[in-house]
Image (cartoon, rainbow, N blue to C red):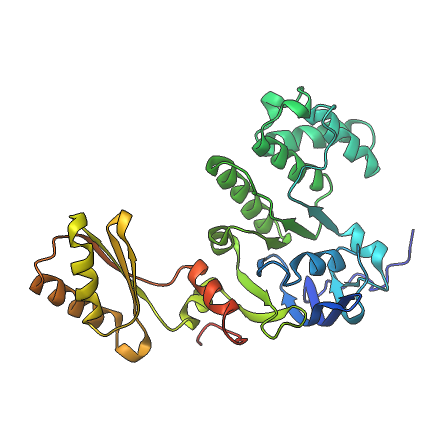
Length: 338
C-alpha cells in the first residue's frame, strides 16, 4: 500500500483550488480559478457553455492535468497524489456507466469485488444499495430494461459501493422525469447528511438552488478562459442582483396591454409581457424603493385603469434570473450579510 502522504489529519477543505489554469492549444479553458468547498456540503457549479465546468471537473478527478495553479481533493494534491485522490472520489456523469447486459444486482456485486470486497460482504452491500435506491423489484433484471431514472439511480449506487469522501455529479438528472429527479435529490441529501461532499453541475438551475449550500458561477466575461465570477449561497446570490419582481396575471386577455401601460407608469423598471399567459412582469430595484411600495403603486395604477387582476405577487429573483444577470455583467463575489 502507498504511504499516506498527509497522515490521518482530516482536511479543512474537501476541495481547494488556487489559481488553476488550463489551455488547449491557443485556447484558454481556465484562467485562474479559485474555489474552496467545505466538507459535507453541496457546491453547485454553474456557467454557460465554454466556461470551463467540464474542464475543472476533469482536473479535480485527475483525468486531465492543470497547466498552472494547484488543486487538492479530500486533502490530496491532484498532481502529486492522483492515486489517493481517485481512492477518495466518485464521478457520476450524465450517462450510466454500468453494464447493460448484467442485472442491477450483478453490477453492484461486480463493483464490490473490484473494491476488493469478498464473501458475504459482497452480497450484503449490493442488497443494502438496492434497498436504499428502491431497486429491489428490478434487481434481477438486465439493466437494458431499466428506465432512465432507474439507470441513473443504479449508476449512483455503484459509485457508493465504498462511500467516497467527494462525489462529482455531472448533470445527474438530465433527461429524467420529475419524479425520478426528486428521488435522486433525496439520495443526494442523504449522502450529504452522511458527510459526503458533492460538486454538482446541472443545466437545471432550480436543482442547484434546492440542493446547493453554495454556488460558484464560472464565466469568461472578457473572452479569456473561465474563472469564478460569482460565489455565495443561493440566497446571497439572489440578493446580489439588487432587484425584485412583481408578477401580474390579468383576468382578460384584452387587458394585457392596458395592464402593461399601468405598470410602466409606476416608473419602477422594465416590463416584460407574456401575452399568451396574460402575464406581465415588472422588475424593481433598490433605487425605486422597497418592493412593497412599488406593489402598492402598481395596485393604484391598475385600479385606476379598471384592470381585472387575477393574481399579483411580489417575489425575489429566481436563480435563472441571477444567472442571466451574472453572465452578462462584470465579476462579483457575494457573501451572506453578517
